[in-house]
Each structure stands twice: as C-alpha cells, then as structure tokens.
Amino acid sequence: MTVDCDALVVGAGPAGLMAAEAMARAGRTVLIAEARPSAARKFLMAGKSGLNLTKDEPLATFLPPYAEAAKALRPALAAFGPAEVQQWARDLGQPVFTGSSGRVFPKAMKASPLLRAWLARLRGLGVRLETRWRWTEWTDAFVFDTPGGACRVAPRTAVLACGGASWARLGSDGAWAGLMGNVPLAPFQPANMGFAVNWSAHMARHFGTPVKNVGLRAGPTTLRGEFVISRDGVEGGGIYALSRPLREGAQLTLDLAPDLSLDAIRARLARPRGKTSLANHLRKTLRLDPVKQALLMEFARPLPDDIAPLVKALPAPLIGPRPMDQAISTAGGIRLDALDDQLMIRARPGIFAAGEMLDWEAPTGGYLLTACLATGLWAGRHAAHWH
Image (cartoon, rainbow, N blue to C red; front, side):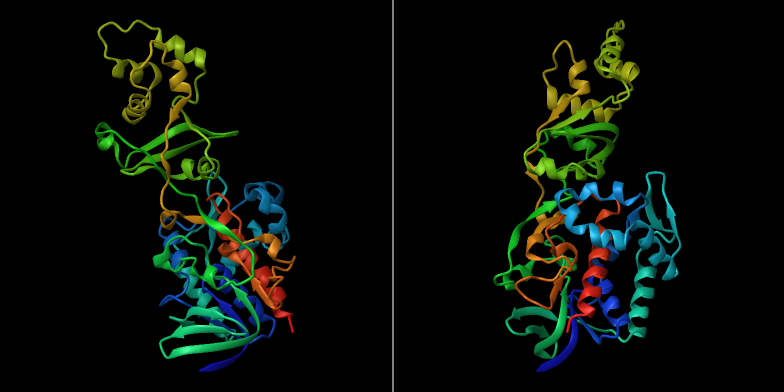
C-alpha cells in the first residue's frame, strides 16, 4: 500500500504533536504515524507526578542548563519559551500555577486533560493520527509496519519526532537510529538517571527514604537539594541535576550539614558527650537524622577522630549510571551540526527533526518538555513552508 502524503510527522509525543499543529495551521494536510497504540505515552507518564511544563524564568537564565546545545536551541526557545508554554496550556483550557522554585504545573496536576484537549484541537484542524504504525525503512519514502500491512508513505515534507532511547515500553526505544543512513548521529547515553551503589546490608532499612536538605557536588557543580536511597543506589532530583558530570566520571560528594561551616561542626561535636552514643550525639549537636547518619557510617567507616570534614564533604562511591531504559531522558541522537538553523536534516532536504531525538540534554525542572515543544513548533513551522 502506498500513501501519497502532503506532510508527515513520525512520532506523536509533544514535539510531534506541536509540529503537526504548526503545519496544519499553515494549511498542510498532516498525517501523524505513531508506533504505540496511543499518543504521547511518555508525556502522560510524566503527568502522573504533576507534569512540570516549564520553569518561569527569563530566557537568559533558562538557556544555560542546555550547555553546549543552548546556541542551537536558542532560536526555537526564544520563539516558544516559558511564557509561551504557559499560554499554550491556558489556551487548551488548563490553567497553570508556579511553585516556589519557579516550576510551572497545570492546576490539574496531570497530563491527561491537556492531552485530550490538544488531540481534539488537532482533529479539528484535520490532522490524521494513525497508531500502531512502526517505521521500518527509509529510502526515497517512509515504510511503516501497520495493522493493515506494510505501508509506503512519500510525503512532500516530514518532521521526525521519534523520541530518545529511554522508556522503550512508552515508545522511546531509539530504534529509529538504525534507519538514518548517512545522517550523523551521536551515541545515546542516559541522562537524568539514578546511579548504582553497592550498599551493605545495613542500608536496607533506608531503601525508599529521602535524604533532605543536603549539599551535593560533582566536579565544579554544587547544589542544594535532596535525593532518595533506593535498593539499587541513589536517585531523585539532586542526583538527576548532576547526572551529566557524574556520568562523565566526577566524584559525588555530600554535605550532610549544608547550613553549618566546618568550624561550626567541629565546635558542636567537641561538646561533652558523656555516655551519649555517637548516633545521639550527632543527632543532638548537628541534627543529623538517621538516614544521614547511615550514609556517614556507610561511606566513611571506620570513622576517624575528626569526622567534621566527612560531614561537610562525604565522598559517595558510585558504581555507574542505572540502565538507559530507566533514565528520564537521553543524550545523543541526531547531531545538531547535521541540522540547519531551521532544524532540517542537511543530508535529507525537506525532512526536519525535533524533540529528544536531537543530541541535547537538560536537567529536569521544565527544561526537557519546553525544548521538545519549542523544537517541534520550530521544525513544524519551517516544514510547513517547504515545497
């Protein structure tokens, strides 16, 4: 079966849906091909924890977390940044609020109402969504394995928005990389992921426990945050924010008492202890809770006489990142220098790319979703004018 197609989008995640809407609004007839049984499954999964849409901050502050990719992403983010994301959600009937950290969420605190409204709007624009269409070949046309058999699609223009290589069960399996031919790719790597730790049996009682109000350092990067002790290691926001330097081999160092100086810690620990146990002494003088004490014992036993430096800078030995399929996002994909400033693939004129399949990474906190939406819109707008 061969389908003559005006504008094709491969992938029905946020980037793909945004590209489809941009092209439909420009008058193109759009077909979306999605491998999974329904659209935006990873988006819906993110919504289960509140759906952090963006971060309410000016572009000059918003761009640096994208590191070396910031220059390439800047035009798309300047056109559709935090303010535009918020208005987009409101236009879909989903009011938003900004938390104390600047993170923006829909008041419904889930993705499903927003997605339902978005898909309805796309249907109203004439966008056709086909599910269970898995992309299998790419020569002069796109070939899909569909419920009705193999389907060959020859679009006049297309936007690829196939996602990265994490959460394969939700659709982002990275299999598209094997179809890219001479398009330059960077290898996939996990991003925003947990790290494995070889815990002793004594730590089992703390599995699932959050470690709050702690300083974390990896290489030159320091931050205040929290993380969670898991059976497999450490995970959570504080770890995810440092995932890139940790992945690249930096040592994780923990400050268990970030509000106290080294001298203040020494002075407090020097108070007479009497018959009080070390655990109670640490709790009374430094207010170290049981999980912080457990980390100190786990990573620094046998404790030296002067433990203050360890409280302030405790080395945490990590084995390595958790498997890529467990990562929130991935680095790697289509190299940014393989694209022009419109996000068109230089080696394939008329074919554009967007979202997580591009080689960029950013921390959680609204940066990931905003860049997916922005690059999808940017690619879609330019694809709409390709003839």
